[in-house]
Image (cartoon, rainbow, N blue to C red; front, side):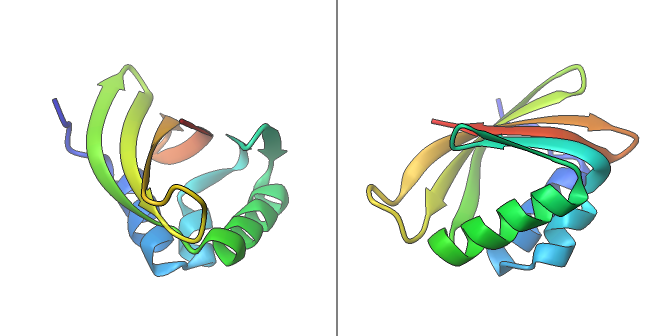
Length: 109
């Protein structure tokens, strides 16, 4: 069952699809952590750098296909299209939220 996304996640995906780094970053807490492609990025500067690098490299857009929630953790299945082999592909995003901000994001297949 697809749940209605909370505002920080809606804002993140809208910004991601526009390739708007500042707006994407605005959804994250200053001490958030992102895990993607086997690397961990902690804090606003590191997350900004990751966003800039991956946005430039892949130019992805994400269509949310499914969303489930368990406590403060949201699991999103997204159909991701962009400049990478196998596009489009379904990726899973696991977000942790606190105080209306993303505190953790893990991206995987």
